[in-house]
Length: 276
Length: 276
Image 1 (cartoon, helix red, strand yellow):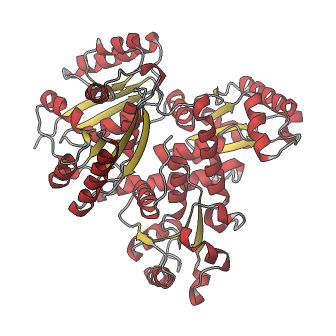
Image 2 (cartoon, chains in turn orange, green; image 1 turned 90 degrees about the vertical axis):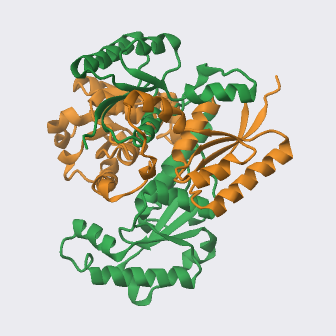
Image 3 (cartoon, one colour; image 1 turned 180 degrees about the vertical axis):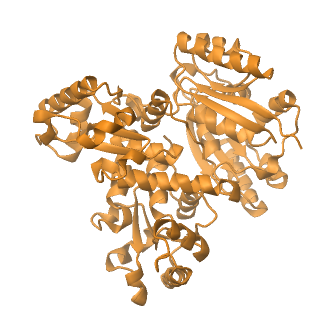
């Protein structure tokens, strides 16, 4: 089958992250090969006209209307984009109109900046940065100080996804997430460190299929004992036994992205998701 | 004025990150006070029915239909949510219908998982994790090894936003982002380190208003010279002079979130945004 190819623009007067994520979700529903361009901070008429020309040029080259997913507050900027040859869809407005009826209030579109900073959210933003600092300071068992301030303490063997998951929890949700590694030397007599015992309710285990773990470790240290399937099998078995013994909740990270692991942890632990 | 209050649900069979971000963007357009609940991984009929009951209970308590922003692939799960008392809006579908006409192809909705892992994107995912590893290993000038593998090297004084921005670049966009701090001891004779000189085109400077910097530092070390406005003014002036002398591009991070700083840097440096 011949898969059609389309140019797609994600355009915003802000970061364009929302336009990009949603447009990508929409496009992934179609059997179409996509060539995409993201254009953030389209805030001036000058830049908007340059963007319009870029869209029009693609149309002239290909004879096919580029698809445009946009979110722009100022009407005069929006108008310029809408004059382009693109097939333009306002990602937020499509949902605003039906809501307006249900809510029986008019929208006040001026203040909106999804990923922006303003005096009203500065305190919340500072808490997020503090969560990132905390998480970095408590990555990989570096520091066991102030561990009682952690909202989650991730456990697991080396390279099972603790660090990226902790950082994602801090960055996306403002969660203070420590993590503690079980290393090969611990395995002969694996036990839960004394510092972690009183914090049992905040512990969360990660596990991973030994085959995937061996492949990840092989990238780091080729042909090492560390990366051998035998070693990986042994470590994973020991750690899973520890989780069961102490009734520590855990999930297998093998087939999940950091987004999925992080949101599953929050869901299972009943932690609130902050939004930034 | 009496601001109405509404319960809002963000529901998905995946992480619900897209539903949350978009629903939040839509709600922020209305002068309505929002009480929100995010429910990810609604993948079974059992869980869907529990969610329906949760929505219905709110309706019975408040007499007001909860607003529901959802994205669910399986029709049998979707149907259960749609039977609830909520005012339900499919965040992706609202944009799929008009596109279907324009593209003249039917959507194939089964495969969609925005933040999921699958064999087709595993290589790209591994590259993202490698970018996070690289960024952590090159945070705060810890290591100057392999600096030529960085796609961006952020410069700036202590606490101007280098670390969160680098991590966000790695996490969200898969960019290998090193960062290098200028510390107080450097200031008497501030110069660009020899290791950075050949990498001039990848350098990017951050600056910050001295007042905001002093407030951030004060949180860390109260009443210190480090946090004094005088010290902050001096450091910022020196570093900005260095940027200008070496023609290093820079932005002032004071009024921007990490999302905004990161996307501005990519935009100004012409770096591609990967999507995960």
